Image (cartoon, rainbow over all chains, first blue to last red; front, side, top):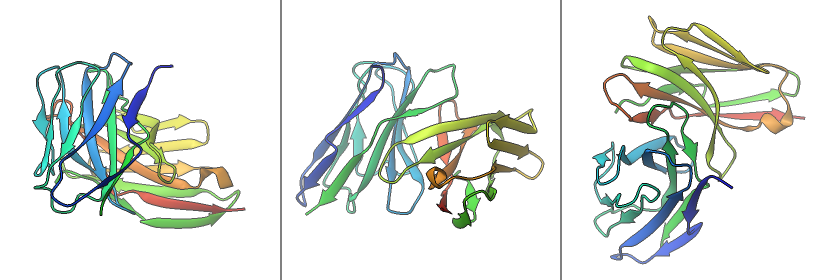
Amino acid sequence: DGGITQSPKYLFRKEGQNVTLSCEQNLNHDAMYWYRQDPGQGLRLIYYSQIVNDFQKGDIAEGYSVSREKKESFPLTVTSAQKNPTAFYLCASRVQAGNTIYFGEGSWLTVV
Amino acid sequence: SQQGEEDPQALSIQEGENATMNCSYKTSINNLQWYRQNSGRGLVHLILIRSNEREKHSGRLRVTLDTSKKSSSLLITASRAADTASYFCAMLRETSGSRLTFGEGTQLTVNP
């Protein structure tokens, strides 16, 4: 089946650790996105990438890093510099010339 | 931030009633989209309206767009308990390429 796969679904991080959230898509989409969602809130854009080896900061990029070495993969690293990382993280993608954005099922990150 | 603002934040209605949600935004857009999110899941695309359109229908959904007021509304007619979810508007900005930003969302509860 075509779609966007995020892993892990649940992740616990100790303070001071870096963690990486995986996002893989087999839709042959050009653009990929990472959003953060806090409970009861909307989505805030962390990073996005329009093509391989290129990405741009969103509204809340501080404390996060990404890479786009392959078209189908857009991993997000939550670094120790992110002081309040506990949230729901959503990965998404779309065809460059298209409008609809497709979402993965999300990853819950909790700092313990 | 270029996010939109939605109101109401929460809406509770009885099955069979209509539900109306509003979205306002700040900058010029190419199109505006509405998405639905069930609790703890990814978002699902519902409907898209382009900046040169004023109204669009899809099944029980009706979307309007007023670019002079920078606002949009989503109407769900004859609501069902299964419509209970959060609804978000999303804006694709003219000058931002692939950047897609979301409103804060409306939590809709449809009581059986």
